[in-house]
Length: 251
Image (cartoon, rainbow, N blue to C red; front, side, top):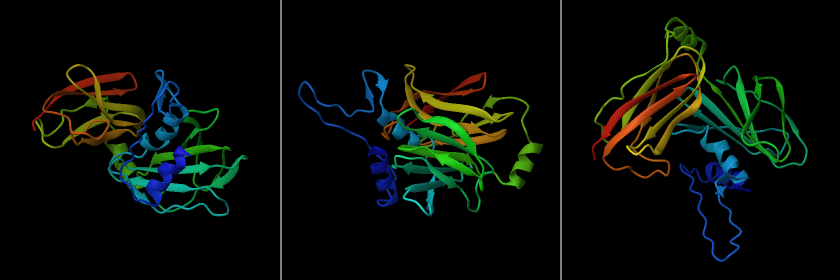
């Protein structure tokens, strides 16, 4: 139901943000939180099917599933050169699908949340090939849209090592750009922390191809609220590489 509600907000309401909240009272509030007793619930992982892959800068594009009642959403992020497709199978039996269309990545990683999976990667899908959509599940297909020409350029300019560059501008207001490079396809987590070491915002949590990449921080935290002036730290984790850069926000 939660996956469907988010779908409706995006597909029919053209929402650019989703806020999940609850109000409860009494000894047995029948809590519907994303995290209960410090443990993520299924609602957390359903939400993650959207927020892990549909990042700021993504624009919704046309998508449809023919021959079946499978709600579908597709997003293209030019800044990160990625495509994300969300599919909801509310049927009690698996569905066989084939993904096709212009400008698709060569491969799409398939992540699924169901009764037995928590936003787990279960396979890699190629356009034109058949794949099985698990029963009673929500699935995200995620891949890079780098063209063959861009890939050739990046192959020539493949860096020799990992690096996190100083953000620019610094100090900044209201936004700054963070650049980093990876010498091979790597899972990258780029996050902002305050001076107390608390995580403020995850800027990137995805697989990036070899090359140099840029991500923007708009001075907002996880909840979309503006953070106060002060010193912050930008940390990257990629493969075995870790680095930190200090930045200053001046309101």
